[in-house]
Image 1 (cartoon, rainbow over the protein chains, first blue to last red):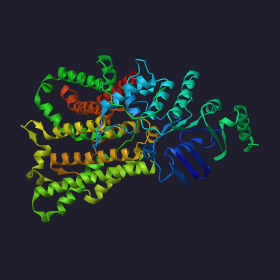
Image 2 (cartoon, rainbow over the protein chains, first blue to last red):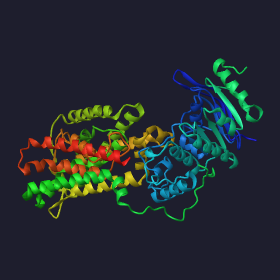
Image 3 (tube, rainbow over the protein chains, first blue to last red):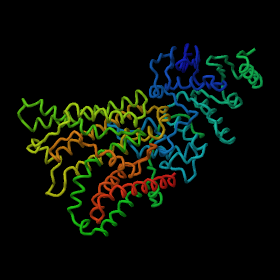
Image 4 (cartoon, each protein chain N blue to C red):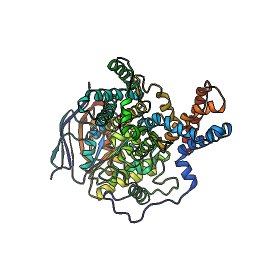
Length: 251
Length: 346
């Protein structure tokens, strides 16, 4: 079976700094992969290579077995990669509908916006998917005044509205309440049921362990190891994570 | 958050529509209503203090003759400022466009037909302005230098280029009066309504449509609001900003043509008095220097307030010395008002 996404020998350096070194990474069909690693291990850089924001210094990227050259954000989106960024990537002074359709506004061939349809779709997503009932939230309200959970809801629903095949979640529970986090974990399980693939990054090892089929541990820009969650207990995984943070080795 | 993670958009049969609420309308349009309030208040003050002047149609014809020269540049400048950039070089672009104009006019003497020569010269001016704007944009985007700094530099550079290329001389443009372009650009409809005002209205409408109804404008707002978010979501922020600089270059060159046709004369200092008026119109109109917010209509009213103050001070019976003091007072008050309205709107 071919992989949904595969990185072969990918390295990335920013000037003198080697952020990623010789990364081999696979994401299967209908698989949820958890990425674990300490701060600065290179998780976000890896994500931004997959989403086309950064270009790798060396190495190859394959989507469904096809090699892809010069991956960019619009190209990755065409290939079905949708991302919920750690920083949420919202424009807080703009209205909800402008945020939902950021970067791929619905417009005709001349580039004129179809505002009514974007507002209609936003209203539908709001009520059906985001569960927003507050009167302060409408397609024309500014995103800046929303709560942390509502903002995260916007970022997630935006990722789902478009034909997503691979959903990347970069620290999605950051700044969320316990209840909102639980809701998010359920949502990631929903991705699995819908037969999509996902890459899930979180500081909370329990969140990752609960939803991921496989866990990939990144340390100092390298893949330190991978484990099937079915064959390792969460305590063992914790111990290994601590050990690797201290020594750079698993055993 | 518990939606089906699949993406196709089902067709919505019912349109989403909110019942009209005056409070919401006032909140979403607070900047435009605020500046409209300042505009009407000042106007009433002018009428009461100098009824002879402000109740006669001549003063309005005079306003519509002189204000469009900088007001049309304030429209694309608004777009640049919403994208969180700045352009201080447009007065020099006005003059540089006219240098291109005269070079092409003088260089096409073999054509013989004056109208065709003037037409080609106008095109040359517009192309020159667009290219200079493109260069501004390239330096800002590709080298990552703040546009305030870049355009201080290019402002000197292009003014210098004008002086070098013309040897600092001024010259008459009487020949343009024999062509159709003179009445078309700066004539008066019915002997009263100036054509430059028509051009201002046209550019205002085009600017409004581009900003509010076109993908370009959507990307301008997103770029100015949060550059990083816009890039993560696939907005080409570099191209968007370069296009904004090209737009103001194009319109500045057009303003240079309009003004030079109006006085039928070329001065190498063309445009140098317009820098602060144009900037003040944009900020008076409620566009934020922090990017992401601003309106075309606000700028339009802002320009007329700026343009009317000078005439009004004299008409009211104060000496011309008062003009700048009143300018400053109204600008500072309006900017405070806009900041207050913006905080309430959030």
